Length: 158
Image (tube, rainbow, N blue to C red; front, side, top):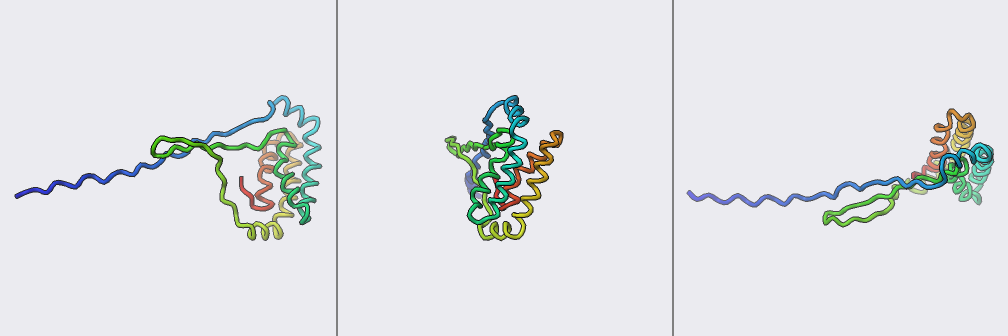
């Protein structure tokens, strides 16, 4: 009896490792940011929030309102938005970096959301966030809320 040789093992598909995510932080130090908040940030944020909301409810001012909303954390504490850099390695060992773009909800859905919910929910959220920031002890919660206003207003994700 002759034995048939076993077939060679199937090649194992190598999966690329997950990307290495690096959080990029920039901006002034905590002392400068604290002084800014005490002297300017708390009252200027209230004004910018109101201007952003009023601009946002007009069709012409909508881009300005969204632009201002995205910069409220910077106005409050001089903290720029946190960004992330992704380092990818492919199967050959070559590496490259890039910034990930999140999949956004389609524009018609976002527009309908803004008309039905976003305009009033963002006003309520910014009001609560500002009050929490001014109380100092609840500042982290207020900043957390401010960072989510773009999503509440128009379902925009960072």
